[in-house]
Image 1 (tube, rainbow, N blue to C red):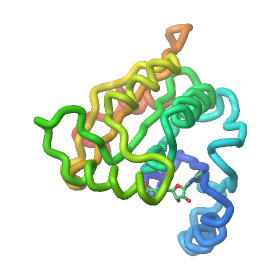
Image 2: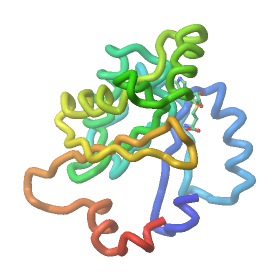
Image 3: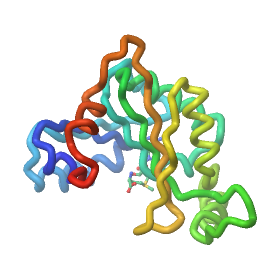
Length: 179
Ligand SMILES: C[S@@+](CC[C@H](N)C(=O)[O-])C[C@H]1O[C@@H](n2cnc3c(N)ncnc32)[C@H](O)[C@@H]1O
C-alpha cells in the first residue's frame, strides 16, 4: 500500500522461510517488481545489518517472544537503522494498570501465553527497550480502527544534525496529506 502511494519507496519484507513461500506468490501477482522484495530468515538469529534502512516496521511480532529476546531484537533493529530513521512497532497492548480498559490485550496475553513463549507487552515496556537501544521514543499512538492495538515509534538520532529521508518527508508533506 505505502509503496503504491510513494513511487520512490522500496521495501524488504522479512519473514520466516515457510511464510515467504506462500507470501511470495501473492507478491508476484501484485506486480511491484523489484521495489518490494522478500527476505527469508529468522529475526532472532539473522544479522539485520548496520545502518541499512530508513524505517523498520515490526508488526505484531513481539508478543511471540520473551523480554530478553525482544530487548535484543530492538537493539539489532536500532543498529540496522540509518541515523534519523525510525523503528516503528505495532502491537496488541497489555494494560499497565487495572484502571485501563483493554480486553483485547488481556485476552491475547492469555492466548499467547498458552500458544507461544510470551504474551502481550505494554507500550511503556516497548518504549523502555527502545530507550535502552539509544532510540528516542515518540508519543504512543492508539489505533481506533483496531482497539487494543497501538504503535510505538522511536527515532534514531543523528550525530551530525542532518535530517533523514523520513524526516524530510515529514517536513515536506503537510500532516493532513500524509497517508
Ligand atoms: C501475527 S503475524 C503478523 C503479520 C504482519 N506483520 C501483521 O502485522 O499483520 C506474525 C508474523 O511474524 C512471523 N514470524 C514469527 N516468528 C518470526 C521470526 N523468528 N523471524 C521472522 N518472522 C517471524 C510469522 O511468520 C508471521 O508472518
